[in-house]
Amino acid sequence: MSHLTDLPSWAAIGVCGLLLLGAAITLIGSLGLLRLSNFYERLHAPTIATSGGTILICLASMLCFAVLQSRWIFHELLIIFFVTVTTPVTLALLGQAALYRDRFEEKNGVPRKHRPAGGNETD
Image (cartoon, rainbow, N blue to C red; front, side):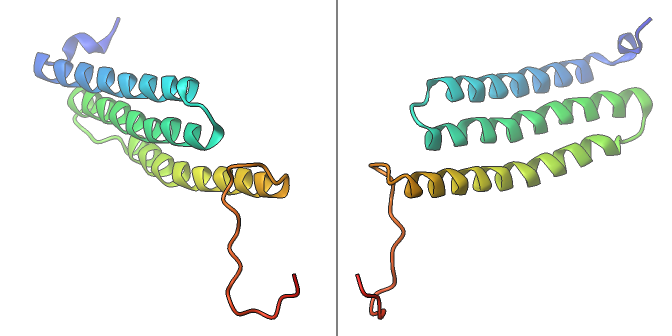
């Protein structure tokens, strides 16, 4: 049997609301990945949605198990911490790698690296 029948209705409403909101934000980020036109635009939608959706889903889990077991769950805090720390770092690394590749291939529409003025360069 399930212990979820022991969950009070106020907590069940909160858990359901957080889960639905987290799932909706994650779905919106996934749709943004499909709908946006180029790689640089596609970086932002899933990364923001991943962080926001994960935080809300973990908060729902924390609320559920805090009410059912009368204790805080440390695992969800670790998940929230690592997702919010690693997602922006991954975004930055992917963006820098794509920018380096596009500059190396000399694609149109990619901002060029600026050279410092007043150097002794012979171009």
